[in-house]
Amino acid sequence: TVTYDSENHFQVLFQCWGSVWPRVLPYCLFNVILAAILHYSKDGERHDYGYTGKGHSLLTMIVSFLLVSRIGVSYGRYCQVRNSLEKVITSSQQLIHLMSVFTSDNITQNGKEFRHDMAFLTMTQVRCIMCVMDYQNDKVASWDLPEIDPQIAVKLREQLFLNDKTKAFAHHSWISKCEENMRVPIRLALLLRKQIMSQSKKLEQPLIGAEENRMLGTVDAIMNAYYEVRGFLTAPFPFPLVQMSRTFLFVYLFTIPFAFLNDVTNPIGHYIVIFFITYGYLGLEFTAIELDDPFGDDDNDFNNSRLCCFSFEDMYLTILDIDGEEWTDKLRKRFNGGKLSEDLPIEAEQWLRKPVEV
Image 1 (cartoon, helix red, strand yellow):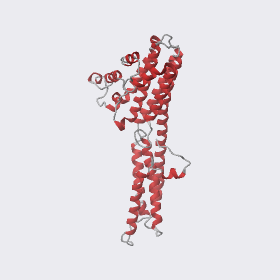
Image 2 (image 1 turned 135 degrees about the horizontal axis):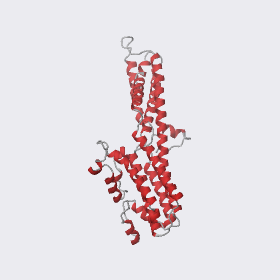
Image 3 (image 1 turned 90 degrees about the vertical axis):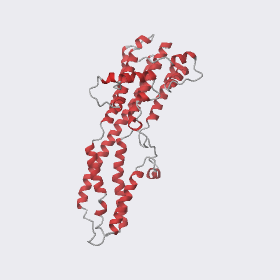
Image 4 (image 1 turned 135 degrees about the vertical axis):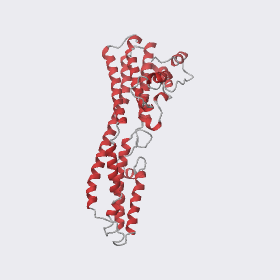
């Protein structure tokens, strides 16, 4: 995500990081060069390719309407998916906070194991949601992530339509890896709900119904936000409107030099006007393109990795507050591919290597 100081006019005008200038500049220069070629090749009426600007003026209204509509819708979708992403992060943090508060009286081994599994599943859920967002760019599926517990990865492969046994229950034959990757957070939400419901058997002091429902409701909030993200990914900006606006835009921009040919004033002024008109209109179009795909590694894309790390660190602090350094270290190492540190007690190492209940 690009950061800047809006009060620093020099930085805003000349910052290249996250700017559309590198992408728009070639089109601006091309249009200026085209205008110069037309101007200096003009030979009276014999080679006069100019025309009056009346038709061009009418086209300006159509192009402006389509472009403003496109940028408005794209920005609305961008803000909506950004809010959904924030809901995933905040709801996951809230789930761990609620779990910590509601189970604070359970300080035995069973209580610590319950909180450990809840935190790990929640972190896995958040990581897999981010994986769904970034799949179109890095092509890494959730079950191939190094952070995923091997037991969970195996269970996911068994439950998704990735083998002949489960494919027999599919309603269609065009199953894709991308589709199945989007199904992973749904399966993990089921594991989270099962883990919450298992508290009556695992905790010495079980949660009351209201507390249990509050935690289940927080899982619902995470999933509702994920469904909004999935809707953004599966329902892109309508192609006919994109095609129409871009067609009108290119026809309009690259006929501007012809509209200026019949003007007998200084051509240098024309070149400057053509340059900035091209920059203005194409700059908005490239901005809309950036807003249409806010996931990935581009300068203006969401920094999903940073958001994940911030959320996970908050969960570590929560576990540190209630269960201490030992269990925080176990959670961190377990989510780091099961790598163990030398100073972990034998009991912690045995628990870390114990299969996850799925």
